[in-house]
Length: 394
Image (cartoon, rainbow, N blue to C red; front, top):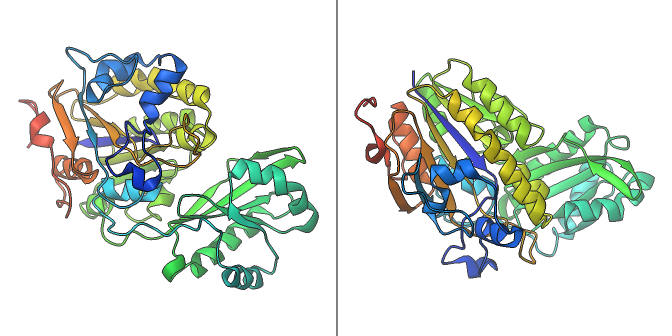
């Protein structure tokens, strides 16, 4: 029985890509800028694995004998959003980015949407979700009109107080939006953003749900399940892939819970892939430009890495990476076009191999495909043979 464990530190970028200026992200470097501004990061486990060897990070030292193999990956697809990054990891390269709406959605679409859901709406603007919730929350509670907004990402977000619009109705409203947003309006995700509380103190709940588009082709996940192995998804992975190729999934209430759910899956005997997204880095800290909170979240994740590595079986391989950046030290509150780190550890693998700069995220998926013995991906170059130890299976 062989397993791959893929943990995505959502938004933990490691330096601006050459085309970052085209996205307004020149100079972004999520990890390095956080470490610099925080005066260092207490991440001894990631440091020992070779994170500081992958690229230069202030106060994170390169190791002479890293415990893991290290490198970083470039994104070949157009865009810098969650779906694009995760899809590329599993073999899909997007030639065209998902559409964004910096001036809000067309008025004629909003009118048709309101007719379908039987409610008028508020907002229809680019906004921070926490800010618009506080600003328009009281009016929403008074009128029952859901708050519609977007961001620099390809999203159509709908916020509603759970005591004003029940969760079941909010989810149906989102399903209607997903059905209507087609063609030039085909955003990557429709996101339900429920909240509770009173004016001046509204708080998001953990009942968020993403309604994504289907992947345009078969992914690594499909190949694994078609081969009779399992794909066990933690966090928003199931939403990102719209359930395609997922054998079983569990939601998570933040990073810590996501790690615990990953460990629960690790204690089982299912061959295949455990695929985890740790969303707090992005959602709670990156988008809110909370440098200290982001640093503490990195340190909290690092502290739990020994729990994960201590229960790995001899043939397990752990991959740690990210899907894009979200540098909280910049003026922007949006994702940033960055390289992402790549750490690969397995009890039987070689250690300290410099994997260098990978041409695309799909190299990771191609490696997992080769290791699990499933059909190869259409994109990506496997680096498994570079890591294989003498006793590793073929």
